[in-house]
Amino acid sequence: MSAINPPAPAAPAHAPLPLHRRLRWWLPVILAAAAAGNVYRLRAAADLDTMTRNFRIMLTLVGAAGLLLVWWLFLTRLRWRARLAGLGLVIVCGVGAKGLVRIDGSADGGGRPRMVWRWTPRRSGEVGRLTQTAAANPRAAIVAASDYPGYLGRDRSGVVTGVDLEPDWRAHPPRELWRHPIGLGWSGFAVAGSRAITQEQRGGDELVVCYDLASGRQVWAHAHPVRFSEPMGGDGPRATPTIDQGRVYAVGATGILDVMEAATGRLLWTRDVLKEAGLPNTYFGKSSSPLVVDDLVVVTGGMAKRSTLLAFHAADGAPAWRAGHDEASFTSPMLVTLAGRRQILTVNAATVTGQDPRDGRLLWEYDWGNNQWPKCAQPVLLAGDRLLLSASFNAGCVLLQVKRDADGRFTVAERWKNRHLKSEFSNLVADGGYVYGLDDGILACVDLATGQRKWKDGRYGHGQVLRVEDFLLVQAEPGTVALVTATPAGYHEVARLNALSTKTWNTPALAGNLLLVRNDQEAVCYRLPTRAAGGPAASAASGVR
Image (cartoon, rainbow, N blue to C red; front, side, top):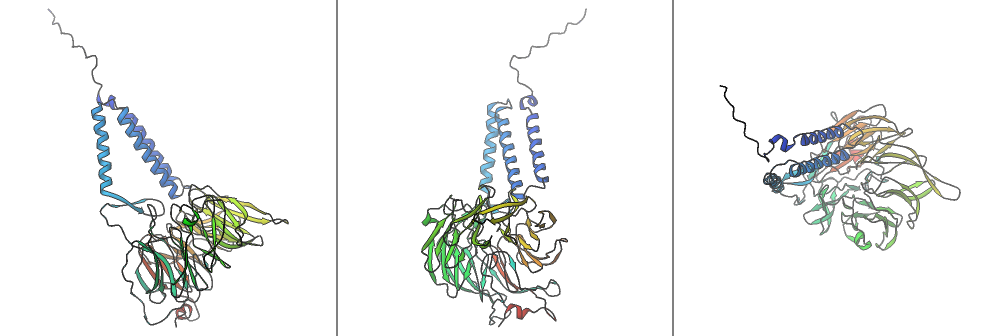
Protein backbone atom coordinates (compact mmCIF):
# COMPACT_ATOMS: atom_id res chain seq x y z
CA MET A 1 0.00 0.00 0.00
CA SER A 2 1.62 3.23 -1.13
CA ALA A 3 1.96 6.21 1.14
CA ILE A 4 -0.26 9.08 0.38
CA ASN A 5 1.45 12.46 0.56
CA PRO A 6 -0.79 15.14 1.94
CA PRO A 7 -1.35 18.04 -0.43
CA ALA A 8 0.80 21.18 0.11
CA PRO A 9 -1.06 23.96 1.84
CA ALA A 10 -2.37 26.56 -0.54
CA ALA A 11 -0.52 29.88 -0.63
CA PRO A 12 -2.40 32.77 0.85
CA ALA A 13 -4.21 34.84 -1.69
CA HIS A 14 -2.20 37.95 -0.73
CA ALA A 15 1.21 36.47 0.05
CA PRO A 16 3.98 39.15 0.14
CA LEU A 17 6.38 39.22 -2.79
CA PRO A 18 10.01 38.31 -2.22
CA LEU A 19 12.14 41.30 -1.15
CA HIS A 20 14.14 41.47 -4.41
CA ARG A 21 10.89 41.71 -6.41
CA ARG A 22 9.41 44.31 -4.11
CA LEU A 23 12.46 46.60 -4.27
CA ARG A 24 12.91 46.36 -8.05
CA TRP A 25 16.70 46.73 -7.70
CA TRP A 26 17.16 47.01 -11.43
CA LEU A 27 15.71 50.54 -11.40
CA PRO A 28 18.26 52.15 -9.03
CA VAL A 29 21.08 50.14 -10.64
CA ILE A 30 20.19 51.55 -14.08
CA LEU A 31 19.78 55.03 -12.61
CA ALA A 32 23.13 54.94 -10.78
CA ALA A 33 24.88 53.59 -13.88
CA ALA A 34 23.38 56.35 -16.04
CA ALA A 35 24.42 59.03 -13.55
CA ALA A 36 27.95 57.62 -13.27
CA GLY A 37 28.24 57.45 -17.05
CA ASN A 38 27.16 61.05 -17.46
CA VAL A 39 29.61 62.21 -14.78
CA TYR A 40 32.40 60.34 -16.56
CA ARG A 41 31.38 61.87 -19.89
CA LEU A 42 31.36 65.37 -18.42
CA ARG A 43 34.75 64.96 -16.74
CA ALA A 44 36.24 63.69 -20.00
CA ALA A 45 34.74 66.47 -22.16
CA ALA A 46 37.72 68.60 -23.20
CA ASP A 47 35.56 71.35 -24.69
CA LEU A 48 33.74 72.15 -21.43
CA ASP A 49 35.12 74.73 -19.04
CA THR A 50 35.47 73.74 -15.39
CA MET A 51 32.57 75.86 -14.13
CA THR A 52 30.13 74.45 -16.69
CA ARG A 53 31.40 70.92 -16.08
CA ASN A 54 31.02 71.20 -12.31
CA PHE A 55 27.57 72.75 -12.66
CA ARG A 56 26.35 69.94 -14.92
CA ILE A 57 27.85 67.27 -12.65
CA MET A 58 26.03 68.84 -9.70
CA LEU A 59 22.75 68.81 -11.64
CA THR A 60 23.35 65.16 -12.56
CA LEU A 61 23.92 64.13 -8.94
CA VAL A 62 21.01 66.16 -7.60
CA GLY A 63 18.70 64.79 -10.30
CA ALA A 64 19.83 61.21 -9.64
CA ALA A 65 19.26 61.65 -5.90
CA GLY A 66 15.76 62.99 -6.55
CA LEU A 67 14.88 60.07 -8.81
CA LEU A 68 16.22 57.58 -6.25
CA LEU A 69 13.94 59.16 -3.65
CA VAL A 70 10.98 58.80 -6.04
CA TRP A 71 11.88 55.13 -6.57
CA TRP A 72 12.07 54.52 -2.83
CA LEU A 73 8.75 56.17 -2.05
CA PHE A 74 6.58 55.00 -4.94
CA LEU A 75 8.15 52.02 -6.73
CA THR A 76 9.59 49.70 -4.08
CA ARG A 77 6.27 48.04 -3.00
CA LEU A 78 7.49 48.12 0.58
CA ARG A 79 5.16 48.88 3.42
CA TRP A 80 4.55 52.59 3.79
CA ARG A 81 5.99 52.38 7.26
CA ALA A 82 9.35 51.30 5.79
CA ARG A 83 9.22 53.90 3.02
CA LEU A 84 8.50 56.74 5.40
CA ALA A 85 11.20 55.50 7.77
CA GLY A 86 13.71 55.69 4.89
CA LEU A 87 12.55 59.19 4.02
CA GLY A 88 12.90 60.20 7.64
CA LEU A 89 16.46 58.86 7.73
CA VAL A 90 17.34 60.95 4.68
CA ILE A 91 15.87 64.05 6.30
CA VAL A 92 17.72 63.41 9.57
CA CYS A 93 21.03 62.97 7.69
CA GLY A 94 20.40 66.18 5.73
CA VAL A 95 19.56 68.19 8.83
CA GLY A 96 22.57 66.72 10.63
CA ALA A 97 24.92 67.59 7.77
CA LYS A 98 23.53 71.11 7.68
CA GLY A 99 24.16 71.40 11.40
CA LEU A 100 27.76 70.19 11.06
CA VAL A 101 29.10 71.90 7.94
CA ARG A 102 28.52 75.05 5.93
CA ILE A 103 29.73 76.50 2.64
CA ASP A 104 32.42 79.16 3.01
CA GLY A 105 32.71 80.56 -0.51
CA SER A 106 34.20 78.58 -3.37
CA ALA A 107 37.41 76.60 -3.21
CA ASP A 108 38.55 77.91 -6.59
CA GLY A 109 37.36 79.54 -9.79
CA GLY A 110 35.83 76.26 -10.91
CA GLY A 111 32.93 76.82 -8.54
CA ARG A 112 33.63 73.94 -6.14
CA PRO A 113 32.17 74.88 -2.75
CA ARG A 114 34.57 75.17 0.17
CA MET A 115 33.11 73.13 3.02
CA VAL A 116 34.05 73.97 6.61
CA TRP A 117 32.73 72.94 10.02
CA ARG A 118 29.78 75.09 11.02
CA TRP A 119 31.57 76.23 14.18
CA THR A 120 34.56 77.48 12.19
CA PRO A 121 34.74 81.25 12.87
CA ARG A 122 33.78 83.45 9.95
CA ARG A 123 36.62 85.68 8.84
CA SER A 124 35.88 89.28 9.69
CA GLY A 125 38.77 90.84 7.81
CA GLU A 126 40.03 92.57 10.95
CA VAL A 127 43.83 92.67 10.78
CA GLY A 128 44.68 94.93 13.68
CA ARG A 129 47.17 97.73 13.42
CA LEU A 130 49.37 97.33 10.37
CA THR A 131 53.11 97.63 10.91
CA GLN A 132 56.23 97.30 8.84
CA THR A 133 57.51 93.73 8.88
CA ALA A 134 60.27 93.26 6.33
CA ALA A 135 61.47 96.59 4.95
CA ALA A 136 65.20 96.53 4.39
CA ASN A 137 65.61 100.25 5.18
CA PRO A 138 62.64 101.77 7.03
CA ARG A 139 63.85 105.32 6.48
CA ALA A 140 64.31 105.07 2.72
CA ALA A 141 61.57 106.37 0.47
CA ILE A 142 60.61 104.47 -2.64
CA VAL A 143 58.99 106.11 -5.62
CA ALA A 144 57.92 103.79 -8.41
CA ALA A 145 59.90 104.34 -11.61
CA SER A 146 56.56 104.36 -13.42
CA ASP A 147 53.02 104.54 -12.08
CA TYR A 148 50.49 101.74 -12.27
CA PRO A 149 47.45 103.94 -11.74
CA GLY A 150 44.62 101.43 -11.89
CA TYR A 151 43.16 98.14 -12.99
CA LEU A 152 45.54 96.37 -15.43
CA GLY A 153 47.69 99.47 -15.76
CA ARG A 154 47.31 102.84 -17.42
CA ASP A 155 45.22 101.71 -20.42
CA ARG A 156 43.72 98.51 -18.92
CA SER A 157 45.60 96.33 -21.39
CA GLY A 158 47.64 94.35 -18.86
CA VAL A 159 50.80 95.28 -20.80
CA VAL A 160 53.75 96.86 -18.96
CA THR A 161 56.54 98.42 -21.03
CA GLY A 162 59.95 99.82 -20.15
CA VAL A 163 60.82 97.12 -17.61
CA ASP A 164 63.59 94.71 -18.64
CA LEU A 165 63.15 91.84 -16.20
CA GLU A 166 65.99 89.51 -15.32
CA PRO A 167 64.58 85.98 -15.82
CA ASP A 168 67.13 84.13 -13.68
CA TRP A 169 65.46 84.31 -10.29
CA ARG A 170 67.81 81.68 -8.85
CA ALA A 171 70.88 83.82 -9.33
CA HIS A 172 69.00 87.10 -8.79
CA PRO A 173 65.99 86.36 -6.59
CA PRO A 174 63.23 88.93 -6.13
CA ARG A 175 63.67 90.91 -2.93
CA GLU A 176 60.78 91.08 -0.48
CA LEU A 177 60.30 94.63 0.80
CA TRP A 178 57.33 94.02 3.09
CA ARG A 179 54.51 91.64 3.86
CA HIS A 180 51.48 92.03 6.10
CA PRO A 181 47.91 90.78 6.68
CA ILE A 182 45.19 92.59 4.76
CA GLY A 183 41.40 92.87 4.87
CA LEU A 184 39.00 90.79 2.81
CA GLY A 185 38.21 91.46 -0.83
CA TRP A 186 39.44 90.97 -4.39
CA SER A 187 40.62 94.49 -5.18
CA GLY A 188 44.08 95.03 -6.66
CA PHE A 189 46.63 97.79 -6.02
CA ALA A 190 46.87 101.09 -7.86
CA VAL A 191 50.30 102.73 -7.55
CA ALA A 192 51.36 106.36 -8.00
CA GLY A 193 54.61 107.82 -6.70
CA SER A 194 55.28 106.47 -3.22
CA ARG A 195 51.69 105.30 -2.56
CA ALA A 196 49.91 101.99 -3.15
CA ILE A 197 46.11 102.06 -2.77
CA THR A 198 43.59 99.23 -2.59
CA GLN A 199 40.17 98.38 -1.12
CA GLU A 200 39.46 95.92 1.67
CA GLN A 201 36.86 94.78 4.18
CA ARG A 202 37.61 94.95 7.89
CA GLY A 203 34.72 93.89 10.06
CA GLY A 204 31.67 95.98 9.20
CA ASP A 205 33.64 98.63 7.31
CA GLU A 206 34.53 98.73 3.64
CA LEU A 207 37.71 100.75 3.24
CA VAL A 208 39.93 102.44 0.71
CA VAL A 209 43.43 102.11 2.16
CA CYS A 210 46.66 103.84 1.18
CA TYR A 211 50.00 102.19 1.99
CA ASP A 212 53.54 103.52 1.88
CA LEU A 213 55.33 101.80 -0.98
CA ALA A 214 58.61 101.45 0.93
CA SER A 215 57.39 99.98 4.21
CA GLY A 216 53.79 98.84 3.73
CA ARG A 217 52.70 101.08 6.59
CA GLN A 218 49.19 102.46 6.40
CA VAL A 219 49.18 106.13 5.39
CA TRP A 220 45.43 106.78 5.44
CA ALA A 221 42.11 104.96 5.19
CA HIS A 222 38.58 105.99 4.30
CA ALA A 223 35.68 103.82 5.50
CA HIS A 224 31.99 103.20 4.87
CA PRO A 225 29.92 101.09 7.32
CA VAL A 226 28.85 98.55 4.68
CA ARG A 227 29.73 94.90 4.05
CA PHE A 228 28.93 93.07 0.83
CA SER A 229 28.74 89.28 0.90
CA GLU A 230 27.74 86.57 -1.55
CA PRO A 231 28.14 82.79 -1.28
CA MET A 232 30.56 82.17 -4.11
CA GLY A 233 33.04 85.04 -3.95
CA GLY A 234 32.81 85.78 -0.26
CA ASP A 235 32.93 89.17 1.40
CA GLY A 236 34.42 92.53 0.60
CA PRO A 237 35.05 94.94 -2.28
CA ARG A 238 36.06 93.72 -5.73
CA ALA A 239 37.07 96.74 -7.83
CA THR A 240 40.53 98.30 -8.03
CA PRO A 241 40.83 102.06 -7.38
CA THR A 242 41.84 104.49 -10.14
CA ILE A 243 44.43 107.23 -9.50
CA ASP A 244 44.28 110.29 -11.74
CA GLN A 245 45.87 113.73 -11.27
CA GLY A 246 46.32 113.39 -7.54
CA ARG A 247 42.88 111.93 -6.90
CA VAL A 248 41.68 108.44 -6.01
CA TYR A 249 38.41 107.14 -7.50
CA ALA A 250 37.04 103.99 -5.88
CA VAL A 251 33.81 101.99 -6.26
CA GLY A 252 32.81 99.71 -3.41
CA ALA A 253 31.02 96.40 -3.79
CA THR A 254 27.61 97.95 -3.03
CA GLY A 255 28.05 100.79 -5.55
CA ILE A 256 29.41 103.65 -3.42
CA LEU A 257 31.70 105.89 -5.48
CA ASP A 258 34.27 107.85 -3.42
CA VAL A 259 36.70 110.46 -4.66
CA MET A 260 39.61 111.38 -2.35
CA GLU A 261 42.88 113.26 -2.34
CA ALA A 262 45.63 110.73 -2.98
CA ALA A 263 48.08 112.45 -0.63
CA THR A 264 45.83 112.78 2.42
CA GLY A 265 42.75 110.62 1.87
CA ARG A 266 40.49 113.62 2.37
CA LEU A 267 37.07 112.87 0.91
CA LEU A 268 36.16 115.25 -1.91
CA TRP A 269 32.75 113.80 -2.78
CA THR A 270 30.79 110.58 -2.72
CA ARG A 271 27.78 109.10 -4.58
CA ASP A 272 25.81 105.94 -3.92
CA VAL A 273 25.43 105.40 -7.66
CA LEU A 274 23.19 102.31 -7.68
CA LYS A 275 20.86 103.56 -4.98
CA GLU A 276 20.51 106.98 -6.58
CA ALA A 277 19.76 105.48 -9.99
CA GLY A 278 17.37 102.87 -8.60
CA LEU A 279 19.50 100.02 -9.95
CA PRO A 280 19.84 96.56 -8.33
CA ASN A 281 23.36 95.40 -7.63
CA THR A 282 25.03 92.69 -9.72
CA TYR A 283 24.98 89.27 -8.06
CA PHE A 284 28.77 89.20 -7.51
CA GLY A 285 28.86 92.83 -6.39
CA LYS A 286 30.25 95.86 -8.17
CA SER A 287 33.56 94.73 -9.66
CA SER A 288 34.20 97.38 -12.34
CA SER A 289 36.83 100.04 -11.75
CA PRO A 290 36.04 103.72 -12.44
CA LEU A 291 37.19 105.27 -15.73
CA VAL A 292 38.32 108.89 -15.77
CA VAL A 293 37.67 110.52 -19.15
CA ASP A 294 38.52 114.20 -19.56
CA ASP A 295 36.51 115.94 -16.82
CA LEU A 296 34.21 112.97 -16.16
CA VAL A 297 34.35 109.75 -14.14
CA VAL A 298 32.38 106.87 -15.64
CA VAL A 299 31.13 103.78 -13.79
CA THR A 300 28.95 100.83 -14.78
CA GLY A 301 25.34 100.26 -13.70
CA GLY A 302 23.53 97.29 -12.19
CA MET A 303 21.28 94.38 -13.08
CA ALA A 304 18.68 96.37 -15.00
CA LYS A 305 18.38 96.99 -18.73
CA ARG A 306 19.01 100.70 -18.44
CA SER A 307 21.77 103.08 -17.37
CA THR A 308 24.55 100.67 -18.35
CA LEU A 309 27.02 103.53 -17.91
CA LEU A 310 26.76 106.48 -15.52
CA ALA A 311 28.97 109.57 -15.78
CA PHE A 312 29.66 112.21 -13.13
CA HIS A 313 31.62 115.43 -13.23
CA ALA A 314 34.99 114.69 -11.67
CA ALA A 315 35.21 118.10 -10.01
CA ASP A 316 32.16 117.84 -7.76
CA GLY A 317 30.33 114.59 -8.49
CA ALA A 318 27.37 116.21 -10.22
CA PRO A 319 25.60 113.77 -12.59
CA ALA A 320 26.58 114.27 -16.24
CA TRP A 321 24.73 111.54 -18.15
CA ARG A 322 23.31 108.02 -18.03
CA ALA A 323 23.19 105.81 -21.10
CA GLY A 324 22.78 102.24 -22.32
CA HIS A 325 20.03 99.63 -22.33
CA ASP A 326 21.80 96.46 -21.17
CA GLU A 327 22.56 95.09 -17.74
CA ALA A 328 26.08 95.69 -16.47
CA SER A 329 28.53 92.84 -16.18
CA PHE A 330 31.89 92.66 -14.41
CA THR A 331 34.41 94.20 -16.82
CA SER A 332 35.66 97.77 -16.50
CA PRO A 333 34.98 100.46 -19.13
CA MET A 334 37.93 101.38 -21.36
CA LEU A 335 38.75 104.51 -23.34
CA VAL A 336 39.77 103.44 -26.87
CA THR A 337 39.91 104.70 -30.42
CA LEU A 338 38.17 102.50 -32.99
CA ALA A 339 37.58 103.38 -36.64
CA GLY A 340 39.00 106.83 -35.96
CA ARG A 341 36.50 107.60 -33.17
CA ARG A 342 37.34 108.06 -29.51
CA GLN A 343 34.85 106.04 -27.45
CA ILE A 344 34.14 104.11 -24.26
CA LEU A 345 34.31 100.37 -24.85
CA THR A 346 32.38 98.13 -22.44
CA VAL A 347 31.46 94.47 -22.23
CA ASN A 348 27.98 94.25 -20.77
CA ALA A 349 25.75 91.35 -19.70
CA ALA A 350 24.68 90.44 -23.26
CA THR A 351 26.35 93.02 -25.51
CA VAL A 352 29.58 94.84 -26.27
CA THR A 353 29.18 98.55 -26.95
CA GLY A 354 31.06 101.64 -28.05
CA GLN A 355 29.67 104.87 -26.60
CA ASP A 356 30.50 108.55 -27.00
CA PRO A 357 32.32 109.75 -23.86
CA ARG A 358 30.73 113.20 -24.12
CA ASP A 359 27.12 112.09 -23.66
CA GLY A 360 27.06 108.28 -23.64
CA ARG A 361 25.41 108.07 -27.05
CA LEU A 362 25.52 104.56 -28.48
CA LEU A 363 27.86 104.34 -31.49
CA TRP A 364 27.68 100.60 -32.12
CA GLU A 365 26.58 97.37 -30.46
CA TYR A 366 27.46 93.70 -30.80
CA ASP A 367 25.38 90.88 -29.28
CA TRP A 368 27.72 88.80 -27.13
CA GLY A 369 26.30 85.67 -25.54
CA ASN A 370 23.44 86.20 -23.11
CA ASN A 371 22.91 87.67 -19.67
CA GLN A 372 22.73 84.31 -17.89
CA TRP A 373 26.48 84.05 -17.31
CA PRO A 374 28.99 86.73 -16.19
CA LYS A 375 31.43 88.45 -18.52
CA CYS A 376 34.62 89.30 -16.65
CA ALA A 377 37.58 89.43 -19.06
CA GLN A 378 38.55 92.82 -20.50
CA PRO A 379 38.35 93.16 -24.30
CA VAL A 380 41.75 93.20 -25.99
CA LEU A 381 42.26 96.15 -28.35
CA LEU A 382 44.30 95.22 -31.43
CA ALA A 383 45.76 97.05 -34.41
CA GLY A 384 43.52 97.54 -37.42
CA ASP A 385 40.41 98.48 -35.40
CA ARG A 386 40.07 94.94 -34.12
CA LEU A 387 39.19 93.67 -30.68
CA LEU A 388 39.18 90.24 -29.09
CA LEU A 389 36.52 89.06 -26.65
CA SER A 390 36.68 86.02 -24.42
CA ALA A 391 34.41 84.50 -21.79
CA SER A 392 33.92 81.23 -20.01
CA PHE A 393 30.72 79.18 -19.59
CA ASN A 394 31.20 77.80 -23.11
CA ALA A 395 31.16 81.26 -24.75
CA GLY A 396 34.74 81.00 -26.06
CA CYS A 397 36.34 83.86 -27.98
CA VAL A 398 35.65 86.01 -31.03
CA LEU A 399 37.73 88.48 -33.05
CA LEU A 400 35.76 91.55 -34.18
CA GLN A 401 36.49 94.18 -36.80
CA VAL A 402 34.93 97.62 -36.28
CA LYS A 403 34.47 99.85 -39.34
CA ARG A 404 32.82 103.17 -40.13
CA ASP A 405 31.41 104.17 -43.52
CA ALA A 406 31.44 107.54 -45.24
CA ASP A 407 28.25 108.56 -43.44
CA GLY A 408 29.79 107.81 -40.06
CA ARG A 409 27.78 104.65 -39.40
CA PHE A 410 29.60 101.87 -37.55
CA THR A 411 29.55 98.20 -38.51
CA VAL A 412 30.93 95.22 -36.60
CA ALA A 413 32.02 92.00 -38.32
CA GLU A 414 33.23 88.69 -36.91
CA ARG A 415 36.60 87.61 -38.31
CA TRP A 416 36.66 84.28 -36.50
CA LYS A 417 34.96 82.65 -33.56
CA ASN A 418 35.83 79.49 -31.62
CA ARG A 419 36.33 78.06 -28.14
CA HIS A 420 40.13 77.90 -28.06
CA LEU A 421 40.41 80.56 -25.36
CA LYS A 422 37.78 80.57 -22.62
CA SER A 423 38.67 83.10 -19.96
CA GLU A 424 36.52 83.06 -16.83
CA PHE A 425 37.75 86.13 -14.96
CA SER A 426 41.37 86.11 -16.07
CA ASN A 427 42.45 88.75 -18.57
CA LEU A 428 44.23 88.25 -21.88
CA VAL A 429 47.31 90.03 -23.22
CA ALA A 430 48.44 90.50 -26.82
CA ASP A 431 51.99 90.45 -28.20
CA GLY A 432 52.52 90.89 -31.92
CA GLY A 433 50.18 88.59 -33.77
CA TYR A 434 49.35 86.40 -30.79
CA VAL A 435 47.26 86.53 -27.64
CA TYR A 436 48.05 84.79 -24.36
CA GLY A 437 45.73 83.94 -21.49
CA LEU A 438 44.38 81.33 -19.13
CA ASP A 439 42.04 79.01 -20.99
CA ASP A 440 39.98 77.56 -18.15
CA GLY A 441 43.03 77.78 -15.88
CA ILE A 442 45.66 76.56 -18.38
CA LEU A 443 47.96 79.05 -20.12
CA ALA A 444 47.41 79.14 -23.88
CA CYS A 445 48.62 80.99 -26.97
CA VAL A 446 46.31 81.72 -29.93
CA ASP A 447 47.19 83.03 -33.39
CA LEU A 448 45.19 86.23 -33.92
CA ALA A 449 45.23 85.88 -37.70
CA THR A 450 43.56 82.47 -37.78
CA GLY A 451 42.16 81.87 -34.30
CA GLN A 452 44.09 78.61 -34.06
CA ARG A 453 45.73 77.63 -30.81
CA LYS A 454 49.53 77.39 -30.93
CA TRP A 455 49.96 75.74 -27.55
CA LYS A 456 48.25 75.13 -24.22
CA ASP A 457 50.30 74.21 -21.15
CA GLY A 458 50.97 75.22 -17.57
CA ARG A 459 48.19 74.87 -15.00
CA TYR A 460 47.86 78.11 -13.06
CA GLY A 461 44.18 78.02 -12.18
CA HIS A 462 41.97 81.08 -12.42
CA GLY A 463 44.68 83.65 -11.83
CA GLN A 464 45.80 86.71 -13.78
CA VAL A 465 48.35 87.53 -16.50
CA LEU A 466 50.43 90.62 -17.27
CA ARG A 467 52.80 91.00 -20.24
CA VAL A 468 56.13 92.60 -19.38
CA GLU A 469 58.02 93.10 -22.65
CA ASP A 470 58.92 89.54 -23.77
CA PHE A 471 57.63 87.79 -20.65
CA LEU A 472 54.29 86.81 -19.16
CA LEU A 473 53.99 87.49 -15.45
CA VAL A 474 51.41 84.97 -14.26
CA GLN A 475 49.70 85.32 -10.90
CA ALA A 476 48.54 81.76 -10.26
CA GLU A 477 45.31 81.10 -8.38
CA PRO A 478 47.09 79.20 -5.55
CA GLY A 479 49.25 82.30 -4.91
CA THR A 480 52.51 81.62 -6.72
CA VAL A 481 53.92 84.02 -9.34
CA ALA A 482 55.52 82.61 -12.48
CA LEU A 483 57.58 84.15 -15.27
CA VAL A 484 56.88 82.60 -18.69
CA THR A 485 58.40 83.47 -22.05
CA ALA A 486 55.88 85.08 -24.41
CA THR A 487 56.47 83.19 -27.63
CA PRO A 488 54.25 81.18 -29.99
CA ALA A 489 57.04 78.60 -30.29
CA GLY A 490 55.99 76.85 -27.09
CA TYR A 491 55.38 77.08 -23.37
CA HIS A 492 58.41 77.71 -21.16
CA GLU A 493 58.29 78.78 -17.53
CA VAL A 494 61.63 80.33 -16.57
CA ALA A 495 61.09 81.37 -12.94
CA ARG A 496 58.70 80.95 -10.03
CA LEU A 497 58.10 82.80 -6.78
CA ASN A 498 56.06 81.54 -3.80
CA ALA A 499 54.51 84.92 -3.13
CA LEU A 500 51.21 83.91 -1.48
CA SER A 501 49.85 80.60 -0.25
CA THR A 502 46.04 80.85 -0.48
CA LYS A 503 43.42 81.45 -3.19
CA THR A 504 44.38 84.59 -5.14
CA TRP A 505 41.96 86.22 -7.55
CA ASN A 506 43.31 89.77 -7.22
CA THR A 507 45.19 91.27 -10.17
CA PRO A 508 48.89 92.02 -9.53
CA ALA A 509 50.35 95.50 -10.00
CA LEU A 510 53.79 96.15 -11.51
CA ALA A 511 55.07 99.72 -11.04
CA GLY A 512 58.53 99.84 -12.56
CA ASN A 513 60.08 96.70 -11.13
CA LEU A 514 58.03 96.81 -7.92
CA LEU A 515 55.53 93.95 -7.84
CA LEU A 516 52.55 94.17 -5.48
CA VAL A 517 50.36 91.12 -5.05
CA ARG A 518 47.56 90.43 -2.59
CA ASN A 519 44.57 88.23 -1.92
CA ASP A 520 41.89 88.33 0.75
CA GLN A 521 44.36 87.54 3.53
CA GLU A 522 47.81 88.92 2.82
CA ALA A 523 49.69 91.54 0.76
CA VAL A 524 53.36 91.57 -0.23
CA CYS A 525 55.68 93.85 -2.22
CA TYR A 526 58.73 92.59 -4.13
CA ARG A 527 61.50 94.31 -6.03
CA LEU A 528 62.03 92.20 -9.15
CA PRO A 529 65.53 91.96 -10.64
CA THR A 530 66.14 93.78 -13.92
CA ARG A 531 68.74 93.26 -16.63
CA ALA A 532 71.36 95.91 -17.29
CA ALA A 533 75.05 96.10 -18.12
CA GLY A 534 76.87 94.41 -15.29
CA GLY A 535 73.82 92.81 -13.71
CA PRO A 536 70.44 93.70 -12.24
CA ALA A 537 69.86 97.42 -11.90
CA ALA A 538 67.66 97.24 -8.83
CA SER A 539 68.20 100.69 -7.39
CA ALA A 540 67.84 102.56 -10.67
CA ALA A 541 64.69 100.77 -11.71
CA SER A 542 62.95 101.01 -8.38
CA GLY A 543 63.61 104.68 -7.83
CA VAL A 544 65.04 104.42 -4.31
CA ARG A 545 66.01 107.81 -2.95
